[in-house]
Amino acid sequence: MELYIFNPENDLALANGDPNYVPPFSVRKMAEDLSLLPYWYANLNSWIVSADKTPLKNAILTGLETISLTDILTQTTQEKLHIKPWGWNASLAKKLSALNLPNLKIPSWEQIGKIRELSHRSTSVSLLKELTSSNRHQYIGKVNELYAETEIEKFLHENRKVVIKAPWSGSGKGILFCNQTISHSEHQWCKNILKTQGSIIVEPFYNKITDFAMLFYADDAGVISFSGYSLFFTNKKGAYTGNLLASNKQIKYILSQYINPEELHSLQEILIRKLSLLLYDSYTGYLGIDMMICKTTQDPASYSIHPCVEINLRMTMGMVARRIHDNYISPESTGHFFIDHYQHPDKLKDKHLLNKKNYPLQFINNQIKSGYLALTPVKEDTNYIAYVIISN
Image (cartoon, rainbow, N blue to C red):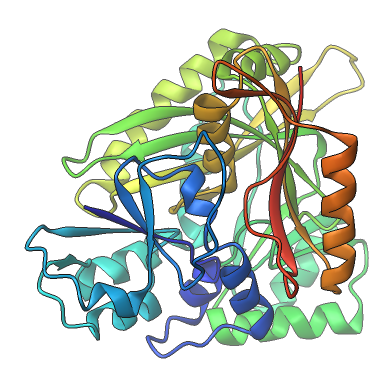
């Protein structure tokens, strides 16, 4: 039996490292409002861990039940309960261990520590250097891990426009874009990251054409398999805003407008080999490697792949979008997957009702052909919503 948990605070918890970590209210609210999101990517005959009993009334959702952590204590099944969280960290492991259920399968503290270590951006720094060391491929990417404020200032002076990242962060959080100078508040941010996380990651700013990711699954035997493509969108600050909902074939066609498809396949095979060595006996579950296609010269036909912007050792929104399209969207249809936040619940509810009116749902063969669908409940106090808008 599988128990799915949506814990979006995972990246923050990894950065903190304390088993007693308590995320900020906004993240706890996101976890509450979107707690039923796993309905859309969980395997059949699973439980979704949530205190929200609001039914998701939809004919295409079957074979899933909701259960709270308190309810788990009353279950008498002797079957092993496999926890499938958004991501593993010390805080979640402690919370689940406190239930004292012998049939709960939880990683050891040593495994949690290894996941945290591998989730540090130094892992992606090392992998990127390995990938770009060969001149055989269209790869770019220069990235450094620095340990002092003077090193950051020197890098900024040498590269002018740079991206500065916290070692433990994800989904576009913990990122600064700097052009020649660094403000007092940005300087203080860097100083705090150096103090709390020990180092900071810096890289030149690239002329990005599009963000995308390759998605993988690491099984219990250490075998890495390719799970598909994600083509996603970010705002000016680099924060995630949504995903294209399209088949792998369609996304690969979009990417092939810039990069030879054989180059994409070659990178996929290289990453499977390298991830097999990197993650063996250390991580089980989905993961994504974020990448970019960048314009590299004045030649209008010259593009390159940045093959490892970051590694996410957890479930990703890209994988959610992949599962939604493959399982619930008509193969011929495309659309977009969004995570939105509204400060005032009334505004969210108004937008939800307007979308329902403007994009009526249409089905074909029990799959969505077109229209708008909220993937998580909309209630009087909802601030966060996941939804799709599909075009045929």
